[in-house]
Amino acid sequence: MQAKLHRWAVADPGRRFDDLFNFVHDPATLREAYWRVAGNRGANTPGVDGMTGSFRPLPVRERLIPKPGGSGKLRKLGIPCIADRVVQAALKLVLEPIFEAGFLPVSYGFRPRRRPHDAIAEIHHFGTRGYRWVLDADVEAAFDNLSHSFAMSRVRARVKDKRVLALVKAFLKAGVLTELGAHQETATGTPQGGILSPLIFNIALSALDEHVMAPWKPGGPMSTPGKRSYRRSRGAPTWRIIRYADDFVILVHGSREDTQALREDVARVLATMGLRLSPAKTQVVHMSDGFGFLGFRIRWKCKRGTSKWYVYTFIDDRPVRSLKAKIRALTHKTSQQDLAYVLTRLGQIMRGWAMYFRHAVAKHTFSKLDDFTFWRLARMLKTRHDWNWGQLRRHLTTPSGKWRIAADGAEFFRIESVTVSRYAYRGNKIPSPWPPANPA
Image (cartoon, rainbow, N blue to C red; front, top):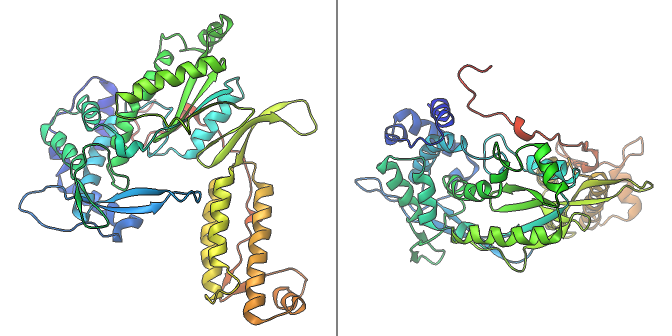
C-alpha cells in the first residue's frame, strides 16, 4: 500500500489523494501501527487515558525535560495516550509515502533512511567547494509556534479526503494536560513527542526548502554546475540549505552581504508559518570561524604543518560536557551503586555517544574521555574500599600489567578503542524505502 501511494505521488506531483481514510482504518494498517507503537521505547510512558463512543483525540500529557547541554532550560514534550499513538502511527503510515515524494533531498530530520551524518556530510561536501559563508539559523520554539492554518494548507495540497484532514486537525487542536493538571488549548504548534508531529512539521517546513532551493529546480539559474559557475563569475551568489527538522543552515558561495540578505528573506518566509528567527542565536559566520550543528563543530582551517585548508568536523563542546555530567553522576566517589551496574550503564551511554560521533575528528576527544572515565572509576573504588594507590594498582591490573576494571561479566568500555572514520557523502543516492515497481 505504501509503495503504491508513493509511486502515484511521484508520478503526479499535483495529485490530491482522496479516500485515504479507508487506508487509515484498515485493520492491516492499524495492526502495523500498533506493533510499531508497542515496539517503541516510549510505549510504557502513560498518556491521558479514556474511552468514548467515537474516536476523538485526547489532550497530550505535558512533560518538561531539560534541554541538552546543561543550559538549565526546559523542553516541552507532549505524550499522547496509547490509542492516539496508534491512530497517529496509522496516519503516518498512509501520509508519509505521499509527502516523501515531494520532499527535497536537502532535509534530513525524521525522514526514512536519513541520518544527521548525511546533513553533516553535505555541509562538508559543499564547504570544500567554496560555500563558506553560513547562515547559522535558530528558530524560536518552532514546534510550539507553528501555525495550524499554514500546516493544514500544506497538508490539503496533497490530501483531499475530508475525514483524514479532520483527523489531522483534531490532533493539532487536541490540547495539553499540564504537569499541574490544567487543560490548555493549543492554538499553535505540534507537540514534540507525538508520532505524527515530526511529519506535520516537515510538511510545513518543506515550504522553506522549496523557497530557498527554487533556483536549483531543472531549468533554474542554479540547476547545473555550469550555471552556478556562470552566476559566480558575474558576481552573483549561489546557496544551499541543509535542514534537520527545525535546525538548519544555509551555505553561501558569495559574501557576508549576500548571506545577510538571505537571512532577511528566510525571516519573511518563516513569518508566514508563524515562526521567527531568534535574534540572539541566529548568526552569519564564516566557516573559518566555525559553527555548531547537530552536536558537531564544523570549521574550515589550515591543516597543521601545511598551507592547505580543509573543512573539518569536530565534536562540539556541549555534548562533551553533557557526557561528562552523566559520567560524574554514575561515578561519584561516595557512590554505593553496584559496580557491574555502573559499568553496564557507562558502556551503554558511552557506546551510543561514540557511535554517533565516530565520524568526526574524534580520536583525541575519545582518548581524553577514556582517561577521564577510568580515573573517575578508580577514585570511586579507592574510596569505597579504602585502598591506597598501591592496593588500587594491584586490584586493577592484570598479570601482564594492563589496567582492567570489571565485575560480574561487565567490563569498562574503552571509548578510545572505537574506530574513527569519515562518513561517506550520499547526496541524491539515499535510497527510498519504497522503490519503483520496475526499477531500471
